[in-house]
Image (tube, rainbow, N blue to C red):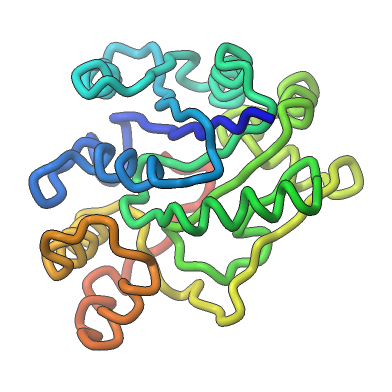
Length: 243
């Protein structure tokens, strides 16, 4: 079974435009994401997907410069973009992460894929019940499940956010969730604002030359340096319909 990891990335953002290519200790944030998830041992191929909008050309150019596979599709119908990429790359299963999560941990991705292979659901994620920090979000689904959503999802909300049609229909699809023993969902590690960017920059700076630190190492760092968590503690999580 071929498992394709798809990184969703775009330049547009209502709160931090161009965030995926912002500098993070000498490298664009998207490069940090790619480097980290490339260490996953349970995915077979990886692709960055962005839109055909000229605004997203910097993402495509970055991928070309770095030799990273890139697929361009619809700007608004992200479900179609995701599905067409999975189809193009002949995936049997597709993992979805986003390019604004530079603390993503390949071990979490591998744990999710392992759960998926063992339980054989249509879809699995680590946020059906939130126990991981925001910024470690990962999803996996069968190609058949994805194709069903692509055919049946009608609302702009479901087309824009790829998977709600799946996880909001538990009677239609077999869902499984990956949970951590302890709840760390109050930690915010995704990048939507300048404060979020300052937080992840501080983490990378503290980690020094080790750019492949685990998410548990970040927790240990925050325990030693609690002021870090305060950097973006007041940021409100945006609603899913916001950009």
